[in-house]
Image (cartoon, rainbow, N blue to C red; front, side, top):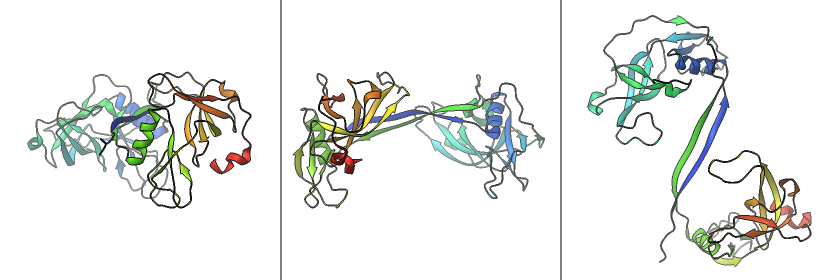
Length: 314
């Protein structure tokens, strides 16, 4: 039996969002070592604050300052921190109800071991030495022996140079193991061939193959070589440069219906100005030396395909 293919894959992108007045005040407050909550119509103080009451859905804007101390309501020990987590040594994830708040805030607690953590223990914020207006301005929580002072006050949410937006890096690391059908497809690509599988019921050819027909639900096994030429069915112009991708913007990604296939795959279009890519454009793959898949597709010079030929593959 051939060895199963397996490879580590990473999906990563920066998530950018603007902030409303409540979230802006909360994050700017953290930069200034001030923790703000928002008061609901029933008088409950929510930390972290939200802009709408989770019970009544009413808009809420009344900010109030709460303490940097609080009580652990529940916790879980993390013996092996991962990249990007608050601490690089074992720590506890804790929900902390800050003094003056009615809800709990999730963060890390620095502790020597799980035996040092308990529900009900008192903790306080350890502020990051350099703060920028992000949740990471709270470096972590640490054990604290003091009591609740009970001194809280309304806050107007006004700060100099408020934070109005944040960029949060999102990343997913995982290992992908293709099945029989996609392993055969990837193996054929390494030999500069494009292979799909035909459904024994509806006779459609799917590329990349999935091992089963998505329409009929029956297993597929008959391999069919398709292409290598094809037709652009739809496309988009990319104007944002991707991290670690050495391609100048703007460029085009397109759905391409390969000759003999009944499912369009997506790939980059090159060898032509981005504003000349069009539906119906006939293209062919370009392989780089040693490459295991086409680097991009380029125009063949053939006349454009008639719309009726590819309309069912849009």
